[in-house]
Image (cartoon, rainbow, N blue to C red; front, side, top):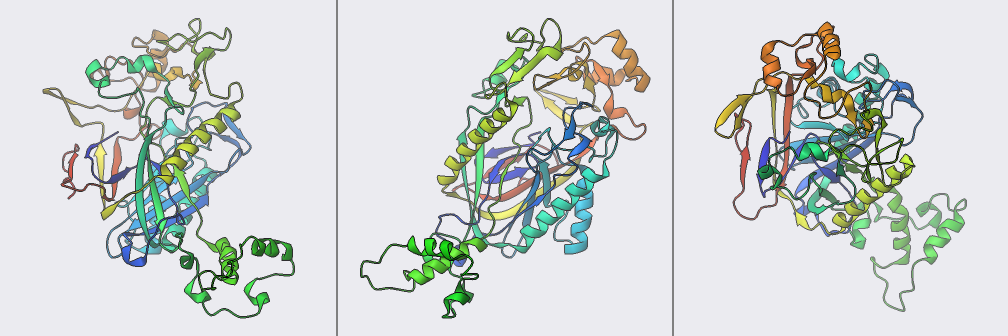
Length: 502
């Protein structure tokens, strides 16, 4: 949920908010005296149980892990003022973040660092993959298909987040941050365009596409690892022993490799050798690159919504014809309607193609990122009861209500259809499933009226047995890193009680 609008000023990171590429060693000139921030990066494995565990996201009991395609990681980014505030952003290769995971991570950080990292300045989000182990959340609706809480999934995510933050904390170094934006047109489509067309025309006219196709990239640049030759030389290496065997470890075992490196340097053509052009030092610099900081990149979730990588559209698996546009069905059945990726029928190839398209756009933006962020590091955090908010609608003020899942929810999507006779766009429901619903929890009339015209299938916001099915009070978090505006910055935060940042 977007809780703010931006007056062309700065970069704010929400949980699950931004495409993100970071680096410690790229071709930007810098020095310690010109650094804006201290930057720390970390990455740690969170793959978890790779077999016999239900995956998180599709709510499909048959989607059981049976091996590893790619390992999953937590990636941490710390940005700090040299003598001021700091923020932590952790991106998970997981469906989503988890409140109980966050609580446990913060407990560990408090034990290690005191009050340095808290719920105020630590934001954790997932990339929304549906191909990671489930069972690590605490609400029934998120773990019912994993048959409850899975300790292995939970423990590895908590450990990985903690260790990635420790890594980032321990390698904080002076650096600068650059930002760039561009459109990525061929990696995502709206998987429910008919639903989008139900929005008012005046709202749709505000946007160029029916999904957000803008990629925002943040580039971190470490001062020491720039292109200037002497920045590749650690001051501790200025007193160099004369014996080659002391300079180059294991020279005898790797003689061919070292000879190849030495031969790659061109002759100086009789020019005077300096401490910057010395072939010996350039060889040492090449070898030292093995010790340079790790490159960490993260492709974080942007706006939540009906965005699908199945860019070819949805088709019926029995006839090969396009699915019904309004209900995503084939002869009235949603189970036969599936979206197709660019590598159809090979889903692994589709994954590769979409990833490559995102990667190429990120590289393009990365190479042209010249707009530098400067200014303060800040954050805002609040717990908000989303089941009871005042919302302005024109000249009227309406209220939100407890969460509820509609009949159309059970139909799934063209990326993963549901079962039985549910249909997308269903605003009627049926008597049989109402009986099933009432066995679990019958919604009261106030809730029915509030959710209208959506018919309630599961009244999750008011279901408490054996414990809460869904959260009502959620953390809302914004991290601020500097500003890009050159005149007055204006911000409007739409949640009452939050002052606009200066």
